Length: 222
Ligand SMILES: Nc1ncnc2c1ncn2[C@@H]1O[C@H](COP(=O)(O)OP(=O)(O)O)[C@@H](O)[C@H]1O
Ligand SMILES: Cc1cn([C@H]2C[C@H](O)[C@@H](COP(=O)(O)O)O2)c(=O)[nH]c1=O
Image (tube, rainbow, N blue to C red; front, top):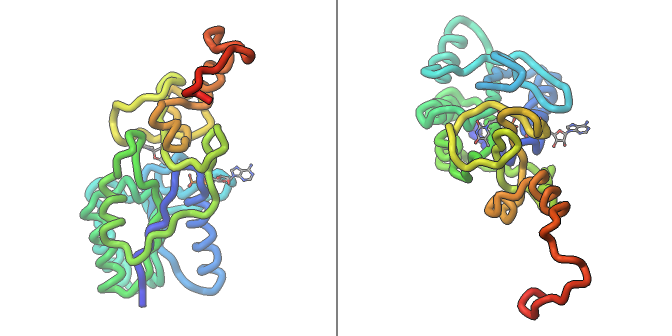
């Protein structure tokens, strides 16, 4: 029975790497995949992983119809056994419905990869629809870590190095580039709520305002 599977996790937890591994394992067994993406950092029509692997993909622009694309391909004599979609959070709910139709009407597995929530901790519309329709939701096993060492569960956006909670939902960017105008950092919920990034924590530790270590501790803080 074919399935719509949503592989979800924070930024930088290995989603694109897993997409490329699934593609590799299936294609080396003679299966034929159709790979889609939208707004990959490596540019149009590319699916890239931070491990350095990259492959060509069909860019799903605004108004792109996945189901019609597959039907046209099959009608022209093409073959497709499974579908991979990276950066699925950027798709519209209608496009996710098209992916479900590919599973149900064309009998293909569809593997969709994406982050669930944006920098404000709100679901992306495409991810919300995937959660509503997917046969299975898989949370990636490799833990991206917050600077404090806890599992990172949320994505923070920084502008000029400072964490922000307002702005456009979609701004393509990367983690680990603190000098970029717009950057991202994965955090645990506690530090996302407190808006405390690694740079903020470092600055706090160096601040002359912090109490000396031998200062008496108030009872409620012990
Ligand atoms: N130099 C490296 N050595 C080993 N693993 C790395 C290296 N750089 C990145 N990675 C791994 O790649 C993961 C990011 O993979 P990627 O597929 O690009 O993530 P995602 O698509 O979820 O944003 C990191 O969590 C890390 O495990
Ligand atoms: C949190 C958040 C992220 N984005 C963008 C930034 C990246 O281009 C992608 C996520 O890519 P990854 O392969 O999962 O690292 O999404 C965004 O546009 N808006 C956001 O709120």
